[in-house]
Image 1: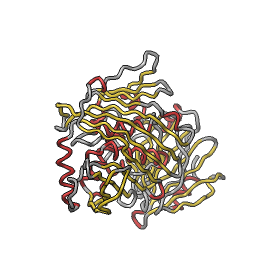
Image 2: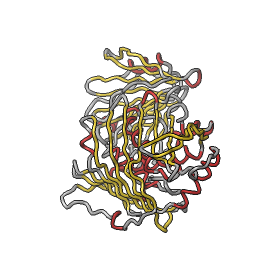
Image 3: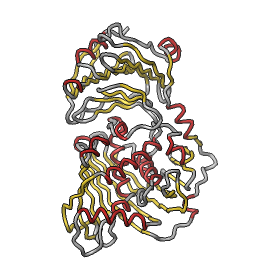
Image 4: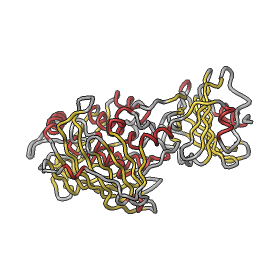
Length: 458
C-alpha cells in the first residue's frame, strides 16, 4: 500500500523495512550486469568507470547499482513494495477491454481517490543467497498535510506476521515499522531494539545515504519512477489469482528509464490487476540470476476508517532505543590521512608501491561502523580505489550475467577477479583476504593493472 497515493514514500519504507528487518550498515560488494563491477563502502561508491565520494543523497543511477551482499533482501523489499503500493497500479473498470495507455491513465486517477488501505501480503523469495516466505500486514492512511514537495503525508503501520525459510527468518517475525506522519519507529522484538527518527530526515538525507530506512524510502521513489517511465503491455485479458479475475500486465522500462535506473536488463516485472477492485493482487519480479520474488495480496481493504491510534507507537520500557541520526553519523566516512588511519585501526594499512602512470592518491576515508575499513581513492590516467577492511566486508558472492569472473592467486592467496565492459569502459574488481583483512582493488583498470597494484602493496 506504500504508493497508493502520489507520495506514499513512508509506507514504502515501512513495508520494505518490515521485510528487511534490522539490516545493519555494512560495506557491500556489487556488480552491474553487462557493465564493470562496483563496490559501495559507506558513502563511497567504487565502480569500474570511476571512484567517487557519494553524498548523503545518492542519485537514482547510483542507487540502482546492485549490491551483491544485500541483493536477495533488496529484491524482497522491492516485491513487497509492489504489493503494498498496490494503489499505484490501479487499472481499469470491470468488464471493459482497455488499451495499455488507458490502463495507465486510470492508474493515476485512482491514486488520487484513495484515502486508506489495509493489506496482508504473502511474499515468497527464491534466490541463490536465501529463500523464504513472509506474511506482512500493513495499514496506511492519507493525512490532510503535505511535505515540502507538496505530496500528501501518509501514516503507516506494517508488521511481519510470519516468516519461514532459512535460519534467519525467525529473527524478523514481529518486526514493526510505524510512522505517525512526523516520526518513525522500527521495532525488532527479537533483539528488543527500536530505531527512531524524523520522517523529514529520511527525505533530506539527514539519516545518511547508507541508512537502511533512507535507502528503502528512496527505493520507493525509484519504483514510482519505474512506473512512470515504463511501457505497459497487456499480457493476458483474463487470469485467475486467488479466486479473482485479473488482467496480467508487464512493465518494460523505456530507454531513458533503463539508463537512469540501470534496471532494464535486470528486473522483469509482471502485475495482475483485479478486474473488480482495479488493483494489483499479485506481483512477480524476476531478477534473473539474482533471484525471483512473488507477492500476492491476500487481503485488500480500501477506504475503510482507520483510527489514528493505529499509527501511534511507544517503545517497550526495557527496549534499547537508537536514534537513526546517530547511526547515520557513524556510517559516514571520515576523511583522513594514511598516517592517521594507521593509528585508528587494528590492522596494518598497506599502500601500493607501484601505480599506473599518472595515477595519484586523492583522499583517504575511514569507516568504523560494523568493522574497520580504510578506502584509498586514486585518480589520474585511471580511477580506482583500494579498500582494506576487517570485520565489516561481506563475501564476494557470484558475478551476475554480463560479468566475467575468475579465480586468481594474489599475494599467495586465492582471490576473485571480475571484469566487465570494453575499451574506455573496461573495469575490474579484484578481491582477496590476507591475514584476516579483506582487500579490494576496483576501478577503470585492466586486470593486469589491478593485479600489479595488489602485488605491490606494502
